[in-house]
Each structure stands twice: as structure tokens, then as C-alpha cells.
Image 1 (spheres, rainbow, N blue to C red):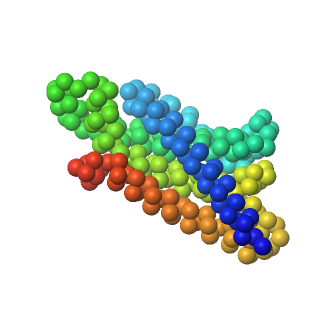
Image 2: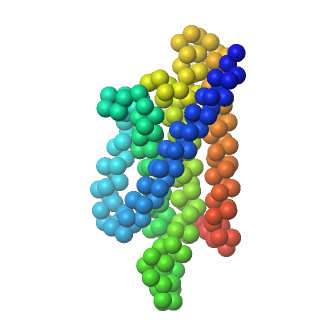
Image 3: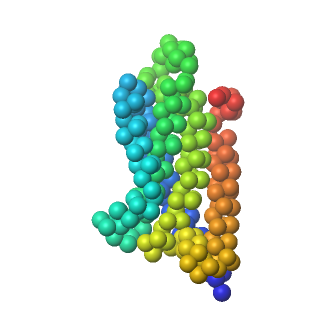
Length: 205
């Protein structure tokens, strides 16, 4: 009875997660690189950005709903903002933790600042960046449940209807796929990290 609806809910849930984490990752890495160039201001900027993390998801989505309406962009915007901070913080920390001697050696070999960033800093910071990506993805899988609160589907629809009707089967039908999704995506991120990170740098950090 619920088979086709569950498949649709999983697809919608994955859509929210992939789009939000993907957009959030790009924005976060870019901002993390910028902050690594002005670390003296990071102590002021990071806490301001982290304020969004303290806003309950249901409140934030509710506020966006008032301005954007019942559209997927409402959920995606909220989830993207939540996904940014773990990756941003880890990108900033990962780049700053790169040993200065590596950068000096690279510049001594004639590398430009951009080449140092792309060939030295980012590869060495990759494990830390991916740790932030893994965290953001797992969080987003759980936060995407809130999409159903404004009628935009996802696995949360099963969970909330199950809670409202005291139907444990519906709760389990929504909760178990979400848990499996989080585990599988975490594993895929680990594989992606190993694929992207140069072999000689995989044990760094």
C-alpha cells in the first residue's frame, strides 16, 4: 500500500540532501578559503555564521516558508545554510593546519599562490574537509525530515503521520530508510575521499 509512496519519499529526501549538501559544500569551501586568507577576522565571522546553526530547523523553515512559500527552494535554502557551517569550519581549520614548510617549499619551487592552494593546501586539508562534508551530509539527512512539516514530502511524511496516528509501522517506514541513507552516504563520502585524495596524502592528518 505504501510501497510506491515510500520510494517517492526516498527520492524526494535524496534530492533535498544532494542539492543542499552540494550547493552548501561549494559555498563553504569557497568561504573557508577566503577566511583562511584573513584568519584574524575569523574569530568574529565564524561565530556570526554559526548563529544560524542555533536556530531550530522547524523555526527556520517556518520563517522561510512565510517569504518563499510552499516550494522546494524553501527546504533547499534552509538545508543549504545548515550544511554550510561544518564544511566551512573544517575547510578553514584544515587549510590553517597545513605545515608552513610545505607552502614555503612550494613557493621556493616557483609555485604561485593559486598553485599552492590547489596543489598543496587543499590536498593536505582534504581529510579535514571531508570530515566536515560527512558531518553536514548526516545532519542534512535528519534535517530533511522537516520538509514534510510544510507539505513538501520526504521521509518525514511517514514519521509525522505515524506519530500523529500512533502508527509505529509508519514511523519505522520513515525512520529506517533515513538511517540507512545516512550510513550509506557516509560510506560513499569515504570512498570519494579516497578517490580524490592523492595516495601519498591519504594518511596525512
